[in-house]
Structure formats: structure tokens, C-alpha cells
Image 1 (tube, rainbow, N blue to C red):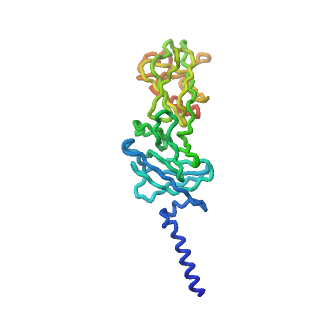
Image 2 (cartoon, rainbow, N blue to C red):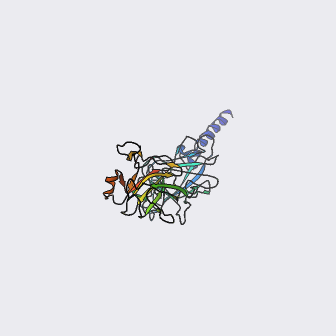
Image 3 (cartoon, one colour):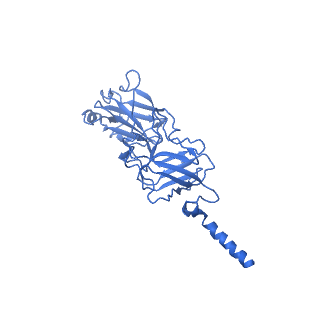
Length: 307
């Protein structure tokens, strides 16, 4: 009897070791420790949004603000392809945040996301905003153009309410721009259209205030869509605009690298926006010219002075 009982117990232990495989995921997908795990259902954007919406990059998930990241493992041989819906077993969150990150440069377009049965809101707080998001690290691909969707290296969401990085964005943000004084150039002001783009979205927002804005020596304040990562200013015409100060939500951008050798108080900091940069005015004012300026939404770094 003792021998039979021992044999029976060995069989039970062996069968229990097969449980993860029988439940449909490989041992590497089993959640950490005693956490039972939950299902996360992700749909890759369809072909009509972008033919390049699929990704071969490594994607990781982290829960509860921890420093540990688990790779999303799929039982399918070629996961995250255009239009594909996949179910992953991931660690269950006990807190209020779950993070999803792209570890490489092959962008992934996510059309919809569901965590433990909760639909995650992937729509920005804008009129007629289309749900969905690109994950890429860094966000440099040209495939976002035309998709109407923003890009982030990482998004996070509340597993209880479904609110996400996109839906929680505050709108609007405050953009303050000072036009160079007429002492620097009588032509520093502009009547051309200036546009603002948050987070490399494909939507551009025109900067416009009542009355005559962007005149020499004056500071203009604009309410614009909030950016999580970056904002971009773009010139839409040939009437150049000289900017001496740029501030976004209280963060003043560093434009000091545009200074030429000078002696205070005759030092002027600033940059021209024009499209194209062909005016002779820049030379006389000693400033650089760009068709676009991109800046970090949280630090003074920008494309003019990237250091």
C-alpha cells in the first residue's frame, strides 16, 4: 500500500507541473510568485490605419509602479501583426497603475486594449479624437503621418477605471512666446500662421489670439493641447518670426545657444521661424532660422539647443 501511495503522489506532482502548459501559456509567461495573473487583450491597428502597424519589437509590462518589467510572450509564432487580436496572461495589478513599454524601434500601433475585462480608454481629450496609440522608442517613424494617432515610448493606465496616459491628458496647456524686440529687427513680428503639435500627433493647432498678436517685443499666451512628451512649433508661411523667449506650462526653453559673441547688455537670445529660411533678415540679426522647433514638455531641452 505504501508503494502504491508513493507512486500515486509522484503522478499527482507530475500532473501539477504540467498545469501551466495545459492552461495555454508557456512557463515563461506565468506571473511572478503567487500572483494568479489576469488576461490582457490587445488588438493591433488594422491595415486601413497603417500597413506598418505591426511590430517585431520586444514589448514589456510593469504593474504597481515596480521596477520589474515582464516581456509580453505570445503563443502565436508571429505576434502583433496588423489587425491581430491577442490575449496575454500578465501579472495582476494590486495598485492603480499598469505600464506598457516598447523596448525597441519597431513601432506598434494599438487599436484597442482591455485589461482584466476593463476597456482602456486610448482616446485623447480632443473633439473627434480617434482611439488608438503608437508605441515606439524613440518616436521617430514616419508611419504616424496620416494615422491620426499619437506616439509614446510608454503608456500607463488605471486597471480599475480604464483611464490612460492619453485620456488623462489635461487640456489645455499654456504656451508663452515673446517676439524679439524691434531693436533686434524691425521685421521680427509676423502675420503668418504658426501651428502647434503635441506629442508628434498628426493634428496641428493654429496659434491665434484676438487682435494683433506676435508683434515686436510683446509676449503672447496661447492655450494649446497638453503634451506629455514633446511639443512642436511650425512656420506655415514665408513671413519670418523671431522668438526671444519660449515657455511651456511653466518650463522656460533654453535658447541661449543662439547667442553670438557679444558683450552684455547687447546680447540677444532667440531664433527665427520661417518656411523656407531664405530671408536676408537673419544675417543682420545674427540669429538661426528653422522651419520647426521641437521641445521637451518637461525640461528646457529643445531642437535649437538640444544639450
